[in-house]
Image 1 (tube, rainbow, N blue to C red):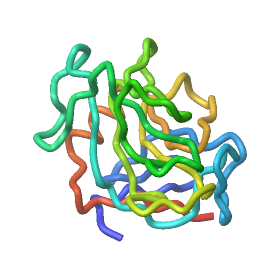
Image 2: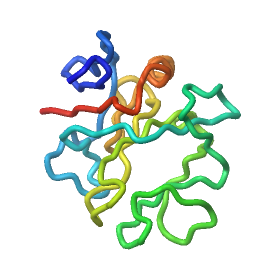
Image 3: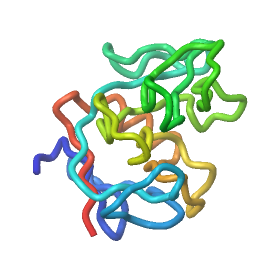
Image 4: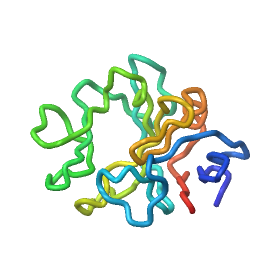
Length: 165
């Protein structure tokens, strides 16, 4: 582990010598992640990308990509593009990255089941904004908005998300 890794602890995420409160999946941590189970997968996950709403915030880092109105994420295990960034119109089950609420204004993408997804093992594990403190996610890691933005400005592509029991 390095100081640039995001390490899940019982008190939140440890990153660069600080602790940030966070929320995880509604069913806790899983050693056998499946699509739709609401769990955060155990393991070490690389940071592979970042998306942000350019109409709502400035670019947090040079490698962040803006989210457009057609940006989606495929969550259909039977789709050849399962667990990939896709664009509308899209005929398969998907999640819109550009949302009316602020949850996905800033998304840090991990390599969970990516880029060579195994059908049914779960789609994207994002790091994103929480709804409110203590409100669980569908498996992602979520932070207070200002904490997420601070992390996004300092995280690197060599950072990892480390989820342990």
